[in-house]
Length: 134
Image (cartoon, rainbow, N blue to C red; front, side, top):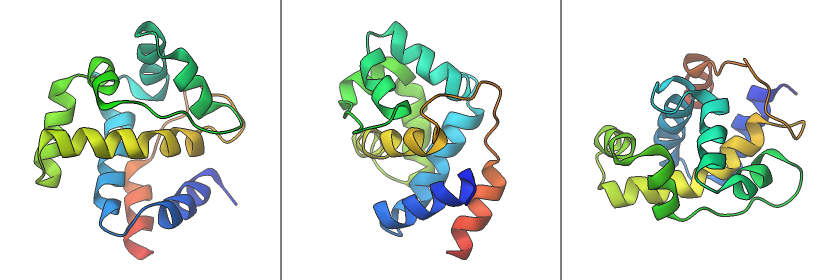
C-alpha cells in the first residue's frame, strides 16, 4: 500500500465524509501555499515557534500530540486560516479547529517512515480524485 493509499484509508476512517472537503483543502494548504512552504516549511515554522516537540510527534512514531488553535494561528497565520474558512464556507474559528484536528493525522500519514522526506511533493489532484471515488 502506497503513501497516498495509506493517507486516504486513514482519512476515510478517521474523518467523516463532510470532512473530506476540509481534508483536500488542508492538503492543498500544506502542499502548495507559498506562505507555508510545503511540509518542510510547515515543520520548520513549528520548530521556530517553539512547537518542535509537537511537530516531532506527528512525524515520528507513536502518539500525535495535539495543537491548540492559538498555536496554529501563530504558525500558519490568520490569512491562511481565513482562506480555508472561505473555501469551506465556515467561520475562521471553525476552520482553525478543523486544521488543528486534522493536521496531526495528515502529517503523520505523510511521514510514514517517521521522518519528513525533503523534496517530496504532494499531488493534490490525485489525492482529491481518489477521495471523490471513496
